[in-house]
Image (cartoon, rainbow, N blue to C red; front, side, top):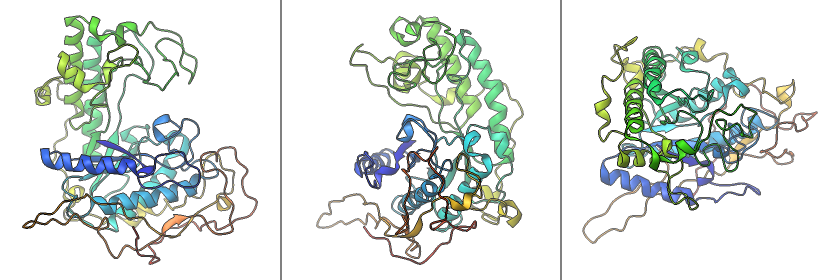
Length: 451
């Protein structure tokens, strides 16, 4: 699972991000994955304006996707970037290496609203499936549950073509506790196992896009640089009572064999209960101050080296007792077979896009700023291949569907827009300037994508 920010494609105006460089590294990752037989889940981790208000979305602060005065415009702009990435990874040269696309990392449904998020998700679905329908045509589309739980999404998009649900189960950020590590393995089994099985039954493909072995929020910069921890009672995100000192959890070199054994049991139970998962993260670097890793719960490679992560995750099978089992197999449409994309109109009719109402943006959604799909669409650069005198290779063009000629969402000439990163609390326009009617966004023949 590789997080990718929107600025891997472009930045606009005075956005302070390094444009395009991340994409070069992603291309390198594709070649490494191809070489070693790995497959990639590319995850759009940062959307313009921020989809969750957390630092890993690009800026710590307010949510400005589907929230605030610029909530619609930022969502529209995000659709352009999602489409550009989907067109690239759907090319024959890349689709078998990048078969899974996490389209929005960790949106906060409790703030933006589940109906609003669903309308955005359906628009994303239509955007990507415009490239192609059925197994082998475009990636599996992975949707995060918005931290409201998988059960709240049961049956929400029947007959959708290869839709997956993503959840990020963490014990670390809930109430802090001094419960022994040995208690967390059984907790993972009882909390996560039935949750995942039910989601497979009620929705389809389900995976944990993130989890770790953290039992608390200790660890250097886990919450952010200088933000403190809930465990020690000094987290800037909200007052909490201190539970203890993080030193014992940050200093892994002092851990006893028993502590490592308990962590191993927790790891095995987590892997068995989640079944399909991505650990966050592969490697934490050594602190330049301490000279060692100071967030050990979060480093898979350190756990491998020090013996609290199994060398073969398949050893986790059977760590949890069977509870509410998924009997399978998946229905044909869930994996791109017969019936895929035959979504009943009644399942999507209420989820118009743009949504009629946006949180923290005033009562009249028709007055909110929008963009227009008339801009030039960027095509992402392809891998650079050095051909020999006897062998050549086609790295693709960056765009798989030549009939997909809709333009990029850009500002409407003559309209003024608030700061896209500070739309919460901004003045709501008193008159519409290009505000869109509430409908499915069109797929318009506007421009041919340009490099």
